[in-house]
Length: 94
Image 1 (cartoon, helix red, strand yellow):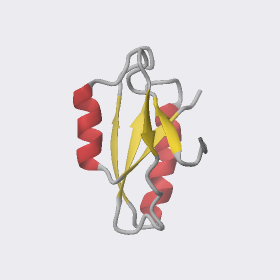
Image 2 (cartoon, helix red, strand yellow; image 1 turned 90 degrees about the vertical axis):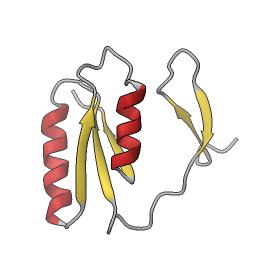
Image 3 (cartoon, one colour; image 1 turned 60 degrees about the horizontal axis):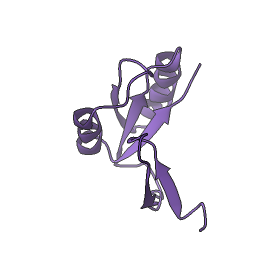
């Protein structure tokens, strides 16, 4: 199995699923980038900077996340991300 074709879905940590990886977009132009904060220290600062740089380039962003890294994202939280964004950057920062 080629790691470029499959990715592990980390959302249900008790029983991870394997899903076929979607092809990345050729461009972010016209797309909305979801910036997902997992609740770790300094993640907000990192995402603030990423958001600033994306908006400089005219790329729309939306922010979402979980209050703490100690909890799994809720289905409602994940559904909101799926509805609001075309692609998602999940920030892992300390």
